[in-house]
Image 1 (spheres, helix red, strand yellow):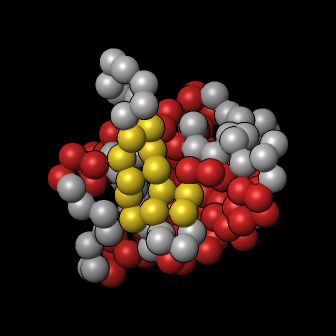
Image 2 (image 1 turned 60 degrees about the vertical axis):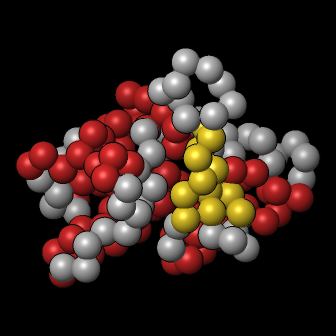
Length: 139
């Protein structure tokens, strides 16, 4: 929601993709025709704290074997289903209720959701539910 990343870009994330101290996540841009093109996106401290808590980023980064392992071992289809489930629980509907709708921040250069109450509630529900589901979902 805050990153504007494509599902495939999120699925490629490893603990080493995150710099918890600076609050940045580095995505490899997968839509380009060549590898190695990256973009860094700032994430809110609360989101980074949740990621660190669930995925133990600091400890994983210190271990050479787990630092480069993907956080999610899902296929794109499974990830898309999980995102749709979370959006339904957060009552996100309409044009925003699709992965492309969530990627709008990437195209508009926005990082944070708007401060209106409903957007903030939906954003918070999406993030909280996503991490809970990631722990329970089948791999």
